[in-house]
Structure formats: C-alpha cells, structure tokens
Image (tube, rainbow, N blue to C red):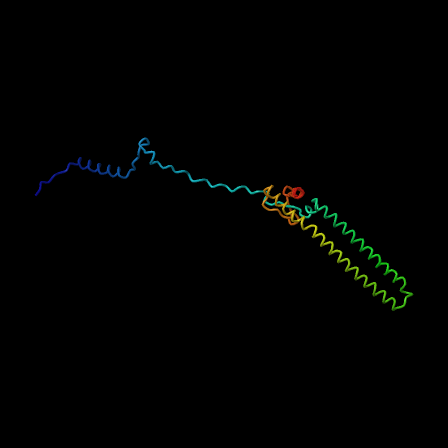
Length: 204
C-alpha cells in the first residue's frame, strides 16, 4: 500500500487560484495594441448611407394654353378669320336678299288675298311655302360651306400650333400642357398662350 501523502492547505489554495486564472484568461478577449496591428488587415466599415429625400414637387408640371385664342391670334389665324368673315358677309348678304324677296311675296299675298280668286291664293301660298323651304335649305347649305371653309383654313393652323406647343413645353420644362378651357382653375404663371403664339409666328 503506497504511503499516504497529506496535502498542505496552502498548496490547495494555490492550485485553485491557478485554475481560476487560466479560465479567466481563456474567456477574456485578446487586445492587440494599436501600434502592433497590421494595416493591411484593418477593415474600415463605412456607415450606412443616409436615405435621400425625394425631390420637391414641381409647381409647373402642368401648363395651360387657350388653344382657341392661340389659333385665332396667330398671324395665320388672323388672316383665316378675315377670310371667314368676308365669306360669311357674302353668304349673309345672299340670305338677306332671299329673305327680303320672300317677305315681299308674303306681304303681297296678304294684301291681295281679299281680291284674288281662291285657286290663285292657293297657288301663290304653295309657291310661298316652297320658297320658304328653299330658303331654309339654302341657309343650311351656306352654314355647311362656312363650316367646311373654317375646317380647311384651321387644319394647317392647328397642326402648326401643336408644334409650337411642343416647343414651348420643352423650353419651359413643362411635362404636360392642356387646353385652358378644360381646367376649372389655372394660375396665371402657368398660362403659356402668349408664348405659344410667339413661337407659332416664329416658325417658317
């Protein structure tokens, strides 16, 4: 039987302190002095980028143009308006002459109806009604002629006006241009009618 060895209490306390120190060293992080770090192994972490705010809304995204005014106040529009007025005056004079003739026939029939025979009155009444129908047809035809002439004169003006609107929109940085008559309200600063007229007159 081996001899029994009695451990000294001081030796037991020293062993326990050594074990506790080793455990603490293993758990603690190793701090490398700044002067001992390798620059090549240093990783710089940039802060996350801040979110950019959206651009402020533009107050001139939409512009307006009074297309009717622009079409009639351009140089071509003024000439077309003068031609239409001359044609209207000519047609109106023809209608006035026809109406005057018709009124004269009616007045004459009313004055002579007491002395004319019944068959004569009936015939003249029939002719008067026929002339009234012809006058109505003539009036409708003259209005149609004026409408066709207006469309003929305005078609190239509107096509050229569209190019002028496109040019002004690009120059002013406007995304949309709408007819002013379709907008319940438009700030005066967004009205480009005068600029469109000037751009139209500058086109060849």
